[in-house]
Image 1: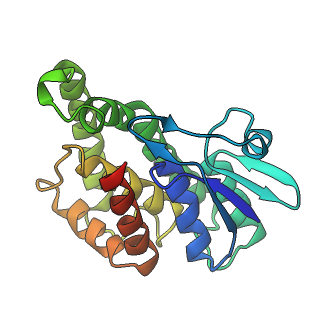
Image 2: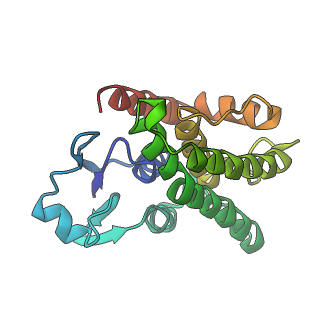
Length: 213
């Protein structure tokens, strides 16, 4: 297996954690990112594997799989143990919904904070209306997560890919102004996940890359 990924891509981080949780080894090919040049350069081999030019892309026996959710589901099907999704169909559907919600917030809202906060160190240059609207959207999301996690260790019956995707979303969001202090169930869950070696290692890698981006 070969994984085309980006250290500062939250969707790539999801796949890297899933690989680590399943104890799988993949050749890592990094697409660099910086404030100055954004993503790139993108070699022809990568563009052949990912026609949209987006990470992550997993190549298995010459066959390319794109989209972090599709990759995670492939890995769950091909390497079912340890399981990162529940077996009962209804429970699995609920976990897919929570994973999809995290992906939605990363794509629709986290990108706004990256553009307005991370890319604009000078607060006066930011679109404060866009930032406020995004923080309001996160507020509703966090309230739903708090209800789900109240009395539960994980989003599903056991730790799984829904937790991974949600943790990544909130880990990035916290560095960009989203506060978790008013959500005790989320806070406990977040610390529980960050204590996992696979996740703590990923977090350290992301923070180191962000510091020099």
